[in-house]
Length: 270
Ligand code: FE2
Image 1 (cartoon, rainbow, N blue to C red):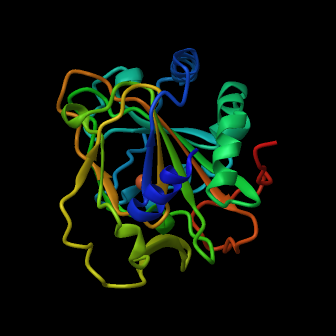
Image 2: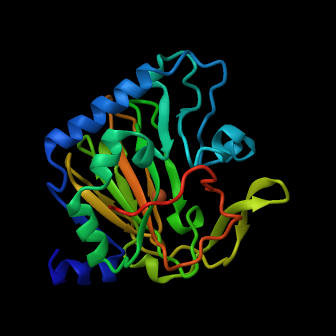
């Protein structure tokens, strides 16, 4: 990564690196995800993932998925086959699945994390995001540090397009420079359940959102405080992506964060 790239990241809070992941590796992740999905028995229990009402917050299938590979469904997709009904797979693919492990720990990604200043990187969370044709739900404006909180804030998102992502199928949108504002909310365990705590009522900055269109294989680096979202997928095209979140082991990771890994110690890129 060049120093102009680092300057752009510091200014905007995100960075777009085209052709980061070779096509063969994109295909390997998609094929592996399809295999995992094929192994899902017709579930009696379908946990819906929604950023709008966070109904999943009461659900142990969700709250105990930090050290597991679990499958979350789109709302209103009950009549669809599983492969076309899933919202995402999460949240420890990078540690529990050999294919996702290999791709998540590519030397290029480790070097990038180092260049971004993560001195003791720990791979905290991974998600395979489906954004299904026609029903792929929007993701509300948020900061990733709301969900993956450290003190000080260190979480950095690596979002890789596995299909071409554009305005038509719900690409990422962001408020450039918005990462310089405060963390607004924190999603955490409190009183025996998960809930969202308001930390700072500052509104999102009044900026024109930028659509981050990304061809297959493009890596988008997201600062943990950057406000971002994505629109629904109303097209007939899929918009698969792989998202990996890394924190710095020098920062404090509170034990009331939603994501806990009692059975699986955090690992770096090695
Ligand atoms: Fe996010």
